Length: 196
Image 1: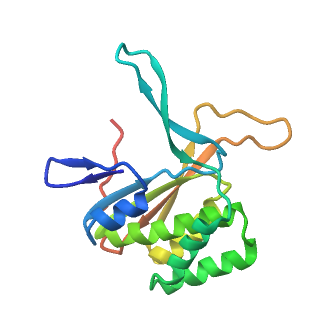
Image 2 (image 1 turned 120 degrees about the vertical axis):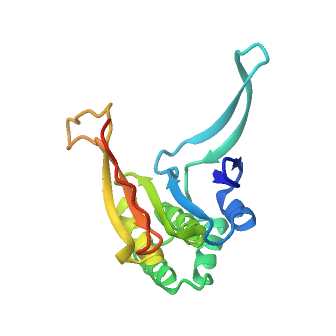
Image 3 (image 1 turned 30 degrees about the vertical axis):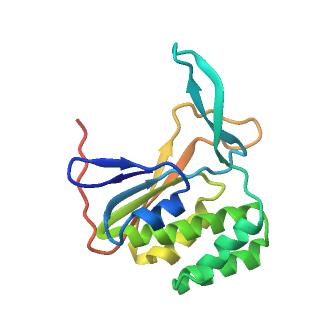
């Protein structure tokens, strides 16, 4: 997680972004959030190290595990949303739990909800958030974002077509991801994009 500090300087934090947001990022201090959380890969991601001679080393540490299960940590994330003071997010997450039950998707959504509340807190009123996700969870995440940011602050759904997309013999090919674009408020800054 990179957080801009003083002009011209950046700070890189390594660790659980929830703890970093709470311990190191002030309210209303962030202009832009691009969030590409793990989703539905069912993989364990490791940080690999190189040996001093530049070759791949066997040394590695686990960075994160993209396999979600309803565990005490999922229950804790759910409880934190219930106690967050964000009644819309709490109501929506409770409805999702009633619908989905205590399954892997619900564990993922509880983990995301508590972090989305913190990300909303740290954004400046002029700030915006881009959340990259796939069709497995995008519809659930959009509902959570509507609850946290307010549906009036939903600005766009950007479709990112994969360059390596291919068709499937039994269904339409999975050829894109989704980026959900939200503003912290109606005072958001928009910089027009140009082709060069």
